[in-house]
Image (cartoon, rainbow, N blue to C red; front, side):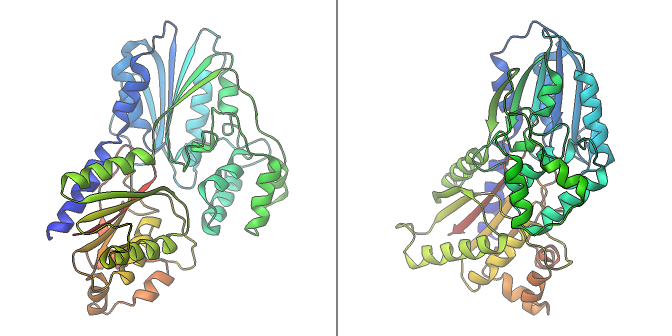
Length: 416
């Protein structure tokens, strides 16, 4: 591993450390005083970490706690909490079990009770109770079809809110008359509170008409029960909830910029709201690398770091293994082929990328030649959505394990 690779890993590490939710939860709770019974419900990929932070602050004043997180994202027991691991990105039986346990915990509370609702990305799949007339299999099919369609996270959550008894503000309604203090770690571009984890405790701005238009846009076909549920409106007003956002992709980009600056790179945050197909983003980032080398990138000269935050999508056309960050990185390899002292990485802040054990991918000017030397078909790998095996063969997988946070993805072009 040469210096630019070591520095890339350092930027990744420091960026993640700066958006871990412990400090954010401490900040959100530090100036709050609760003199009533406290019930903590924590959902999402960062649910365990957020719940642990709340426990450290509130201690024995928590009467009951529920954590619903992704498989292998729990880090052990938390006194007074029931911890449930469930399916992501497609919900499973434990997703429903976790939602039911949360409902049971808040059902029948008085207006003097306080529900602290900790929300992080991934909650849409992890926290689910199908609406009346629907089954878990219906939800699985809808989720799977949406993932394959290339729909973005806001579009996906618009659909899922209308098919659930806990999304789209419905969980907060179930907590009433108890007050809900919702602390949110954002994984949605623009921090749309009604879309993060499909907004279980926030009034829903989407309409049934919008949900049906998304179905039409992607030419999706669902059964009559699903279409009937999509035609029903979600709560538009909630008077028992206060909400605070504790972290976002903007903070992740700023942390990456600060880390790069300490290493001697001139940082430039190009955008924190990137939304497009992963392959398009990969080609775009490699073009930025070329512009830097040509001196046409806003006057930036090496050493510099161009930083982009957001969340891309993958249109699945093959049967390979990969994730959006891996596909983005591998696509970028072609555009920087042969370039010295140039590296591009794309990292999922939660430590997971698609249905893989990798957090993302990293490529440099030699990646394409390495694949050719191994006799691997670069174009074929991308066409089969098999970026995982392509990057693995050349040492380009980023492996972090679960990080405990989830604030979208960060993509960095390093020119040394």
